[in-house]
Length: 307
Ligand SMILES: Cc1cc2nc3c(=O)[nH]c(=O)nc-3n(C[C@H](O)[C@H](O)[C@H](O)COP(=O)(O)OP(=O)(O)OC[C@H]3O[C@@H](n4cnc5c(N)ncnc54)[C@H](O)[C@@H]3O)c2cc1C
Image (cartoon, rainbow, N blue to C red; front, side, top):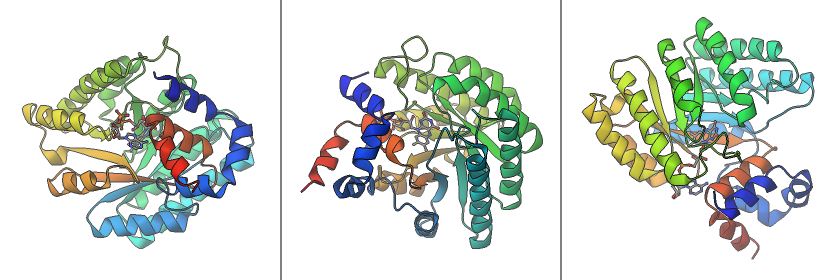
């Protein structure tokens, strides 16, 4: 992992830096590249624009590691409202949640009840619930929660991170559930004990894991989502999909709002279903720093907004 990436990921956890930067106008201007606005209305408006172009979306309210149960219940209630908005507006939109935003650290049982309530509402709203994957210390708990929700509802999927050494085993353990899996490379600062430190090894691991997922998707036994902006990798995986008999509609590509917009539309027009993950909310500092770490050149974008 590059020094710049490591420093930015460490900075993402600094409350002092968050306080210093979050109110600065230039920094807030730079954030707008990845986030249409802080409130749900801005996210819904973008989801509606995308829907007019035939592109689906995934909505997520920024936030993680809440410190009291009331806050977690508020997050659950917020997503229940979001799902109701999706239903009323007939949007092709899904939601994605973080288990620590739903209070996993405080009360895992209550967190499970919240996930069950959200998956049930997602089903009645014609939507879908995604569970993000957070730092490696939460993976075990997240992968216990997911099957429990999946046993009650099919409208739920989970994210897996290719950089984790454990992920090949986790994927095999999940496959019998005919799961929906969003495969990503991984966004956190992890030790080499748990995560592959070299980018080229992460890319190679991603290709192998995605290949396995595509084989299952070809048989109708998984919902395969490639959560990546890596166009070379996507091209190779599209060839692999053809080879294993997965038609373009049998897998999806999900990307983040503000990244590779032109390519999102090109993929969609070639028959690959695309969704755009739209983030909103006031708690954007750690998330934004992770976006900078993914491409440290983005820091120049922040600097440009100074002037
Ligand atoms: C839909 C979606 C959901 C995600 N959910 C999770 C999750 O639950 N848990 C988790 O750990 N991670 C999640 N991530 C983040 C993911 O782990 C990676 O950090 C992120 O996607 C960057 O990796 P990449 O696959 O795009 O490949 P990279 O090799 O990092 O990037 C490929 C190319 O994409 C472009 N690019 C990538 N990132 C940026 C950026 N920030 N700004 C500008 N250009 C960029 C660059 O041109 C780069 O060369 C998610 C990503 C997506 C797209």
